[in-house]
Length: 98
Length: 112
Image (tube, rainbow over all chains, first blue to last red):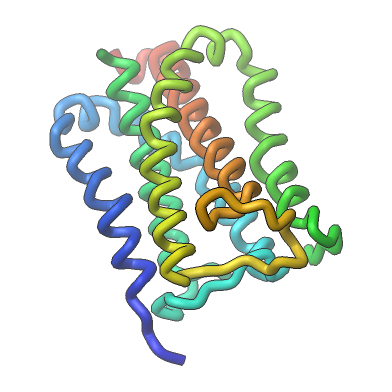
């Protein structure tokens, strides 16, 4: 079992950094509506469920991950889901309050 | 849960965990969804390409792969059709939840 950081690298470059830049340029608005973003995270257990069962069932399999697993899914997947929610909810809030 | 739907397995997971919840959400809160529908579509249209590009690069780079006996084997730039549809429905779901959270908090005077 070897640690591979490819997932983290791709995720950071394409999802995490752009999300943080979007938040950085809209800090005031995002901070004001942080409760909305927090409430949007209610969808996280559902995303975890499908990932857990699909991974367990072998619909997809991971090849280049750190092999750190959280409740049956790789830690990278948890990070991806969290940042996906953060990205989409932030963009939605920005558009809601234009 | 170990489902044996052959090449339709991914589709079945997608319907249960993504399409159905989004559909129920839209039916139940139709009034609020309709009010903010253009924002949901715009937010989804802006974020979908970012997430899709990440999928294309990751799958091409071999970060993860799919079992050919559990998907339809229809690919769009290395990404299985089911994955493209899942990403789209997930983004629509997250954006819908965000607008509903906003409406809820606004209604209960938790935000201005």
